[in-house]
Structures are given as C-alpha cells and as structure tokens.
Length: 383
Image 1 (cartoon, rainbow, N blue to C red):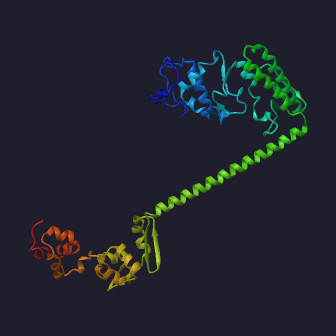
Image 2 (tube, helix red, strand yellow):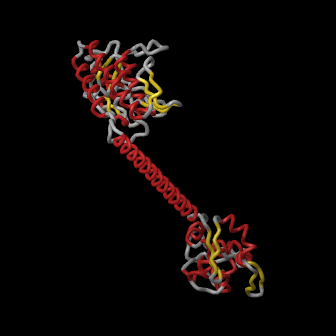
Image 3 (cartoon, one colour):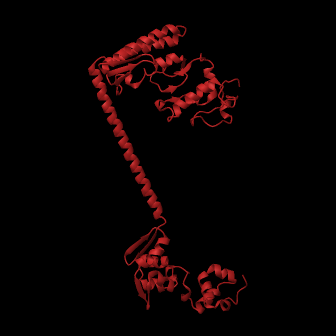
C-alpha cells in the first residue's frame, strides 16, 4: 500500500480505537514492541488524544478532528506531503478560533513559534469575549505582572490595563523579531505578521473598554449558572419520571383485593399472605366463622375467584363462596358441588378416560375425590 490512504484500509480488521475514536489501520508495524517508532503515528496519536481525551487534556475540550483523519493512514498520507521534520502540528496558525484539525487548518511549525503564539488566540484576547483577567496578566502581591516566556517575566505594574498593554506590545515585538528566522517559509511569516498586528489592534487601551469586558464576564457567568440550574432541574425531573415509571412497573406485580367496599393493596402475593390475618376480620357463613381466606379454603374456593365474584358479579360473600361456578360460565366447580349423578352425566359424554380428563376436569377430579371414578368410567376405554 506504501502508506497511501485507500478505502481498502478501512475494511481491514482494525485494532482497539484510540480515545474511542481513532482507528489504527496501519499495514505495517508502528512500534518495535516497547515503544512507538513511527513519527506519523506519534503525531496522529497525540492529535486524537488531545481532542477526545478530555480528562487528560481539559483545555482542548470542544476540539474535533476531520472525519477522514479518524483513520491513521489517511492522516499519514497527508503528513508525508508536508514539511514536518523537527516541527510540531498546529491548528491555530491557519484556522483562527477554529477548534478543528483538518488539512485546511493544520500546519507544521517550529516548537519555538508554537510556544510564542500559544495563548494569543485565547478567548480573553478579543474585546467581545468574556474575561476574568486581561490577556497575559495576573495579580501579584505588589500589583500586576505579565510573563512572555521562561526568561521574560515583569511584575510590579500599577494596573491591569497597564500590564495588559505592555504584554501585548512586547509580545507583538517578539513575534515580529522571530520572522527574520523563518524567511524561507512565506506562509509562516505571513501569519506571524497577522498575529503581531492583531495583538496591537485588539488590545484594551482604556478603562472603559476593560469595565465593559468585566460586565460581559459577569453576565456570562450568570448565564452559565442559569444554564447549570436548568440542567439540574431537567435532571431532577428525569429522575422523578424514572421513579414513577419504576413504581408503575412494580404495580404490575401488586395484589389487590376489594372487600366490603374497601380496596386492600399489597406489593406482592407473599406480602398479602403475611398480612391477611391482620387485615381481614372474621365472618360467619352458613354457621362457619373464619377469616376470608379461611372461609375460601373451607368451601374449596380460590380467594381471587371469590373476590372477583364479589367485585364483578356483585354477589354477597355467602353466594360467592357457595354458588356453583357454572353460573359465571366456568366448569371448574369445587368437588362438594358435584353429585354422583352429575359426574355420571358428564362421564357418558366421553369414550376414553383421557378425553374426560381433558374435556371436563372438574367432574373428573370430583369423581376421584368422592370415590365414584371406577363406576362412572366403567364404560370407557383405557387412557
């Protein structure tokens, strides 16, 4: 492939993504097993990491990489055509205020130039942007100070405006002086001149401009706080919705019983069973006094069925417990309902014992319960 980017490289089986985004589709070894030896991969890896690893590079938050460059071999093909040896990849020289790494905004520049222009495009540089302290300055014990590099540090200035103006003028002069060193690179020289010019054009020159910038900063901070509060409220509302949804899901497994106009609710049938004796009083039906579940057991009726008859059929407790279930369209009558004649009447409808069991389970089980099964099924074939 000789390093040129192609769609075939994308289709190859790729390794683990860099910062969850970058895809190493190299068709050659980029390391010797202990360290990375490929300069193209180093530049690409650092670029991807700066943009998409916010924990390690918080100052690069919001920066993105050109979609095609998410693939290493595409970036390598572009880098091979650039003058990159001994230089650093930069996105600010060509793309002012654009947080984008792309072929149109990236350029390789010497590390000394990169250090010189770093911070010049900080948001505090522009008069219309929010500010806390003006570009290049910081408060110290004896006034204000500014720092240009490791060797140039000035302090003891009387005001923030004075320190800011001194910083911008001195920085502009340093940038213009550095142009003499890079006359061989016309693109670099042109953009350095623009940097120096902008420093003098956009610097704050009066207290009124500074005060206006401070007001914008206070307004901006308030907007950020309001936005945070709105997000917190939305988050709280979303949590509340999830809680209600969860409760509704739990209610699907609840157990409800209505008796004598009162609805009893339990989270589960197990809790209902444990609380039954505390909730239900004792009732007397046909001379038998017991709790509601106790009466259901005595009359061989299911508690849910009895509750449904009381609720839907508007039956009394006695009728719900004693009336045969065929009155509400069911053949699942309790064994005590069936007589020998009724069981024989149902048995004569079937030829095989298995058919009887499947066709009319209630009479089949009642005949076994009362001991009439052999007599009732004497005419039938075996199962």
